Structures are given as structure tokens and as C-alpha cells.
Image 1: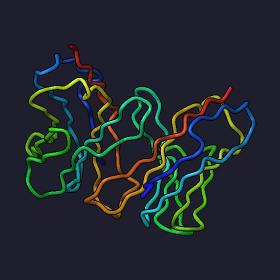
Image 2: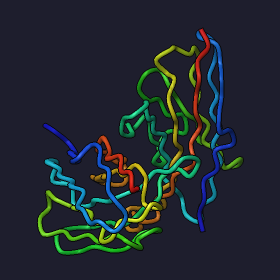
Image 3: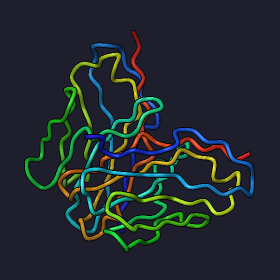
Image 4: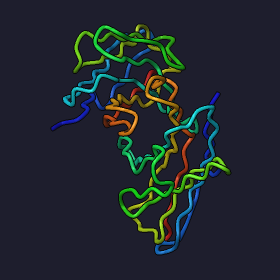
Length: 112
Length: 115
């Protein structure tokens, strides 16, 4: 049982490049989300999905796109990377209100 | 509106002494409350959760937390710190499942353990 798998673990991009951060889960959780973590700011919600075909914006959605074609996968796309997007990105799933999140191990992204 | 405040950005204790990490919350609804731990370069792991059952909640690795509605607090404690407890700790408030997007993370408390 792998839980939540994120790839890649590390990435360096040049300003203006695009890329996709992958997130896959094998727990059949309907709710999936993407967070970014910056020093002193906790975790901030970027986008989330309550099921296949349904996505919505979180607190800091600008510069990011998501789609949810299957229950298992929830990729995060950076359209045109900017240095302000340098961060650690976490994918998380939620089984229900009494269970808490299951987090992936994160992707450390640097935009130069 | 809801919010969560972790009162200390950094706590340092000696090994074998008690740990107290403080968290206050504000919520219009009866919230679910969680504590997560993040070791360096790792993802977040659930320590414990409060979901309107017993007010004293026991978690993994000897941690526990007490929900105090009158004080709107959910402080995390451990009787005796271990070197392996050194990590970042996050308090999280969640209003209800229907508003999962409203889950709010505190800014974190870094726990250091002195030998």
C-alpha cells in the first residue's frame, strides 16, 4: 500500500518553463488537494478536488492548473514558472472528517 | 470565519522534560482539530485528532492533546521529550467535511530537543 506518491521529489526550473507535478493515490479517497509550504507560513491550499471531474480553487491558485480525470491521479501544472513559486509542494488526500489527511512526501521546487 | 494560532514559533526543551506546544483556534462551528508532525525533508504525519468525542485525545509516540472549548485551545503535550521528537508541529482546524477546502493550518512550531 503506497498511500500518496508524489513525483518528482526535486525539480529546478527556469523562469517561464512549464511542468507538471504528479500525485497518485491508491486508497480510493475522493478528496485530494495540493498545498504549498513556505517558511513561516504553514501550508496554503492551492487547488482541491472532491472527486473525478470536479476541481476548485483554494487560497493561492494563481499560476497553477489542475485536472482530475481519475480518482487516483491529481496532477498540478505550473503554466509559466516564476521565482515566487519556489516552494515545497504537498499532495494530500482525505478519507473523511474523522481521519485527517494523508500526505505525500513532497516535491521541492526551485525556480531560477 | 475560523483561524488557528500556534503561539510559539520555536520551543526548545531538554531531553526527558515535558513538552507543551500551544494552539488556539477560532471557529463558528464545532470543529475537528488535528496535530501533525513533520520531520526534516518529510511529509506531514497525523499525530492525533479531536472530533467531538473525548476531550483528552491520545496520539502516537506518547503525545496527547486536550480540547478546551472554554479556552478555545488544543495544546499538545508529552510527559518526557525524546531526541526523535525534534520536528515541526502543525495544529489544524477543520469545520466540517462539507467544507474541506476550509481546513486551516497553523504556521507551525519547531521543537528542538537539547541533550
